[in-house]
Every structure is written in C-alpha cells, then in structure tokens.
Amino acid sequence: MKNRKIVTIHQPESYPWMGFFNKMIMADHYIILDNVDFRKNYFQNRNQILTKQGPSFLTIPVDTKKYKKINEVRIVNQQNWQKKQFSSLTQTYSKSPFFMEHKYFFEELYSQKYELLIDFNMKVINYIRGVLGISTPITMASGLGVTGASTQLLLELCQSLNATHYLAGRDGVSYLDSSLFEAAGIDIIYQEFNIQEYQHFNQKPFFPYMSVFDLLFNQEPSKARALIESGDLLNERI
Image 1: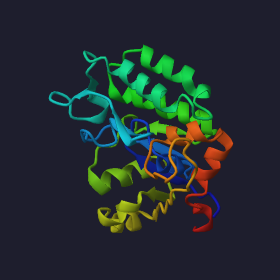
Image 2 (image 1 turned 120 degrees about the horizontal axis):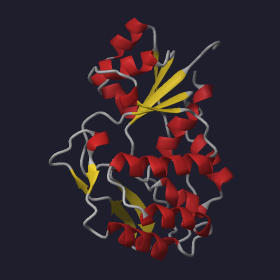
Image 3 (image 1 turned 180 degrees about the vertical axis):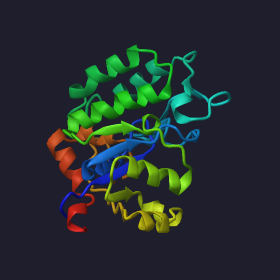
Image 4 (image 1 turned 90 degrees about the vertical axis):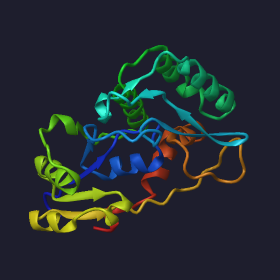
C-alpha cells in the first residue's frame, strides 16, 4: 500500500520476550507506552531465564506505593539485586554459545544504579534492538502530549504519528473498541506471533516464553532476528 504507516504500541518490559521485538520489526514506528498505570510483578519488571531446573524469574525490586505510572516507578536499590541477577545469569549461561558476546553489557548494566525502572528497561530494550539490527524509530508516549484513556488513548497516539495501520497485540481483539479506529480511518491488524523453536544449550524440551536473552545466548544475532521475524510474516497478511 502506498504511504502505508504501521504504528505499534507496547508497555516497556524488563528483559522482553521475542514477540516484543517481532512487533518492533514489523512496525514503521514503535511507541513505548510509559505513561499508564504500572502492573507490579508482570513483565514490566521481570521475565524468565532458563536454568537447568527450569524457568526462573529475574525480578527487579520496585516501589509502587508512591509511584503508579510506569515512568514514575522507582527501583528499590537497597537490595543487592544487581549482583544477584548477574550471578544468576553467569551461573546459568556461562557455557552457552554466545554468552560471552553479551557479558560486557551486563557488567555495565549491573554496575550502575538506576533510579527509575523505565531507564533500566530502555537501556535493555535499546541494547537488544541494536544487537538485532532493528532500526524502527521509537517514541515515548509521554512525549506525544496525548491524554486519552483505553482505546481512545491508543487511537490518539496512532493519529499523532499519522498511522494508517495500528499493529495490536493478539489479545487486543478482546478489549479494543475497533469502531473508534474504523471511524478514524485507521486499520487494526493483530499480531499473530508464533514462537519459533530453537535449541537451548542446557535443556532438551523447548521452553517458549523466555526472555529474548535466552535466544541471544543460544543463537548468533542474524539467526536470532530471523527466528523473531519469521514468527509473524505480517507483510504477507496485509
């Protein structure tokens, strides 16, 4: 389609999964939804790695008593969580094929004390998109001056970037008011991401819902991107 512009919107996750970056690859513009309510102990402050014993969460301790919006949530740095997480990653993945290629990033990541969760998450997200060679522009929702709620918020964010299509998550079909997008002349397309299997170095059965770092520790960047990209061949659907 001439002048087609696909915009997608996603809350910033810690150690995101493969589907997070599939949407980024498929979109022409990626909006980080950082100014909505935080959901504690969901994927905004944790995700899973794969140990010999099975999946295990890396959780960033946060204070949500005073701070409710994602871009306000503060990390609780009284705990020595950085050292513990680096130790967990090292113990789990030191013998994986590509851990050493990313070790320096984690040494730097955990040597700093981040006050805001959003800053930590964006550091991780930008590192991964760089490794995968994703050039899709990213904009923070909080910087777009949009103040709606629910579907109206998503619509106005898309309109602010002159979207022709909104790439929604698979679950969006159950909560989006599609009539608002239809009236605005923006088509909704739903992500149909299927996790592509790869070989874990430390497990024989495949565990699909790990952080994308598990993939990066097991596959070189070009193959990792190919697996993520092939999970939803969006351009063949629209």
